[in-house]
Amino acid sequence: MQIEENTPKRKQSGHAILPGLAFAALLALAVISPGWISTSSAADAPAPAPGADTAASAKPADTSAAAGKAPDTAPETLASIKQPNFSLQYPSSWKIDTTARNYDANTNFTLISPKNSYIQFTILGLADDAQKIVNETVKKLDGPTITSLSKTKLDEWGPHKGVGYHLKGKILGSFPGGIKVFVFTTSRHNVLVVENYFSDELKDVLGDFDTISKNFQMTKGE
Image (tube, rainbow, N blue to C red):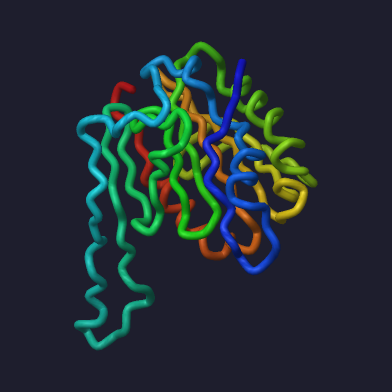
């Protein structure tokens, strides 16, 4: 079972870092290879599948201002994706990494935050059970990618129930952060989610991760 990872570059964040390409090469370990994906051949960096919709939309404005009250927060602007397998709304400041190895709009894609944290989705068939996928992914990450100081079991990601682990430690032995590996199962697929964050960014991306988890939906019957 071969596991790889589509990993964006680590940007400057106020401390010494590896050069972007070196960082990306060292982290290239955790996303499932195309051979696992039963729904697509997932050729390297194909064009987005027909029907992809990334148009930005905005939540309804807070009417409290009209009543003489200042809104608590500004309306959150979301972008949307609709593919045969799933639909997703996510913060419009995040971007899809269409240049990632094995990128496929319907089965394997990565969303990159405005900083360095990111989240990756891989939609798989049912050949392997969820726990096996989690264990294999964690095995590839724990050590080469993150020196974990703690490992906590997960049984939910947003509204989705499944299995997973939250690893906390130092990414590449240098950067405090964490990685969540989670799999939930639908009637036809296992969905692997890998969240990668850096501790100095967590306060800025935690709400975004929550928005993404709440707005990821598999298509009915998938």
